[in-house]
Image 1 (cartoon, rainbow, N blue to C red):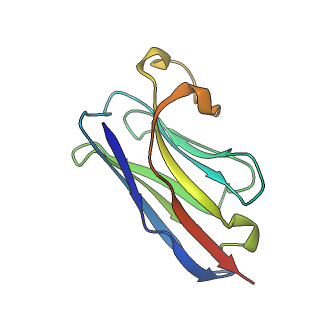
Image 2 (spheres, rainbow, N blue to C red):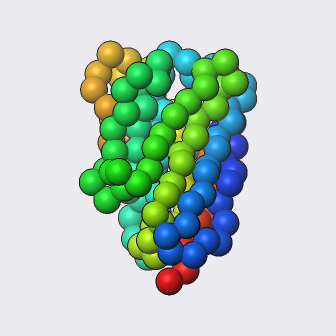
Image 3 (cartoon, rainbow, N blue to C red):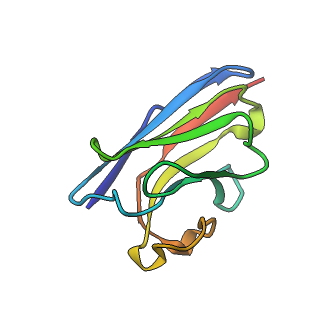
Length: 127
């Protein structure tokens, strides 16, 4: 099972980026997905989550209104559209698939609820 994240890069403050994550090896259409991020010298933190159908989403306060998470179960992908980027958004961004044992429960913002992780894609926002 593998999650492959892509789309990171260098962007100026106020700009936009779209991250994508493709899953292979199994389908995650019945499980929640999420994006976490880890800034230099800081712990990994939750950014956004989406339920199995894509009908419900949840965001950290720091990204709410600027980031949009979406998924395409037919393609086994999850995306994160980031707009109005700020220097403090600079981080390594990880996609993650939630463990099946949490099916039916509200959004998971804790990393221990996620069994599968992508390798991370670096987003750098310059001021």
